[in-house]
Length: 310
Image 1 (cartoon, rainbow, N blue to C red):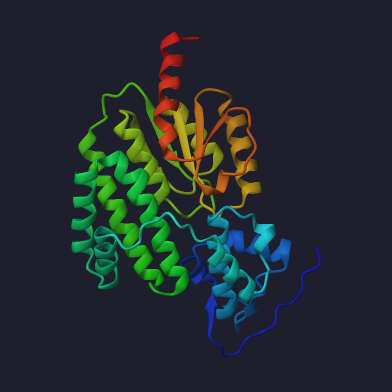
Image 2 (cartoon, rainbow, N blue to C red):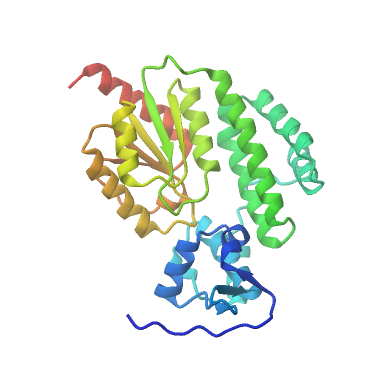
């Protein structure tokens, strides 16, 4: 492989490589792969030789992330001009999310005033009124999309997006603890693949599984295949559940799931969901989910199979 030297930047507004995940919501690994595969982004170098990403390219990466979240593939959007990407984002905006309801407005008022205690109270109140299933499947799904849109537009900052994620995660965690599934006859391990830094969707899956009476073991994000397989064996897991965000390349998700299926060799079910797997073809040993609403039916099938025995 021939390595092309990158231009050196002495002093210019740019994002260092250590901050690129925080600023774009895309992992460094994904960005580096796009750099090699598509020739974008085109980072500069600081005096130490480390990558620096010009602000216009950072904004383009945000637009790209939004378009991939809406269902487009990386090869369709990576490297396109910023104006074209912005136009595509506008066309891709959904029309069915109510963004001016009183509840939604109070959520974003609390977020933009950085009042985490009020934000937590609002989310708890919504959860208690709606029930956990509706709260996760409808309210959280819509709020997540809206937060991402506001961040993309520059209406909220990265730290505010992270504040929302942290508070939402804590609210879901509290609700899951209250369900007490320690004596459940089914066990699920929850994790993400290496390079997948987003875990709020996985926590939502945890909530739905726990609501259905499954004992969930939260391994946290970015666990290698061999560690997942070992954990599944030692914990006698019935399900390994993984979440793949839009920022995770579909090709890599496909390869990871196939390696995991081979390592598990049918000893338990592998469930994968999220935008990152929405366009993957069916594969042996892996159940793909379009959304969390289909989890209860899948559990019914799993339990029927377990009851029937080998």
